[in-house]
Image 1: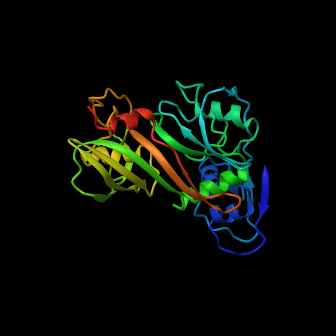
Image 2: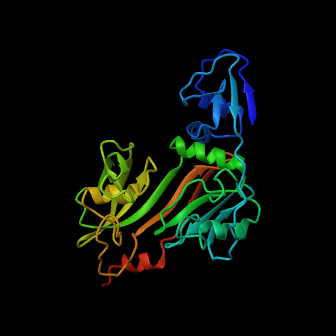
Image 3: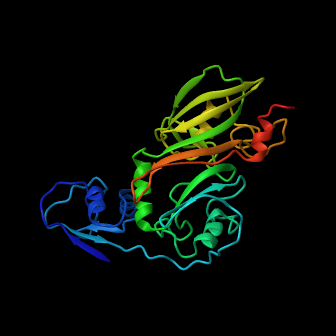
Length: 298
């Protein structure tokens, strides 16, 4: 248990106060408050609580649990690597971290073999180094943090919308607009709890897209997101009538190429290096199957 005594009157929110005085990110502190692992004067508080002079803040330390994660020699294309981060091109069909039904063969297992013991522990026992994620059938650029300092900084950049992610999506339908913005809240579907949906009670979600090519009843889009809601691009595009080819969750998935799983690729990511502050821009080539489809030879 870590104890902090507030030594001056500042009337600051507890999540902001602790983010300045601990190694935890503000997001992590909010999570710990929700889990009642942070108390003030022995009582539960909200993240919006304003700290007062002489408050005694107790923080239950989050201990890393022993788990049976195994390093596995799985081929993954490394796009960039240094002492603090590693950026890879995640292949389609690979789950980012272990979960029910996917105990191994994940990106985490592959990264463990590459980085050995050099991974941030902030992501928790099954998400070492994982700062953000991609769906199983979404390929492309993903950053992994090698240490906690890098992880905290990258998490803050993502939270503050300072990371620019660009995707390529192939959708069904001839999109009329050359460019457009979709601003619709996304939350858990009330009809199917495994799916997300546009809902009035959802969280703010903003997606920008522009048409790169049109071919018959298909459109190739460049997509950028301001927010990072679960399945955001897939839900938004399906909602406006242009589902992503191969997506069996938010459309029937049927297509003339027999593709299973959405044709969605995280093409590039732009961010500041978490330690040096240098502007970083990293790209990943489209997968071969995706390149073949957009040759429009069939």
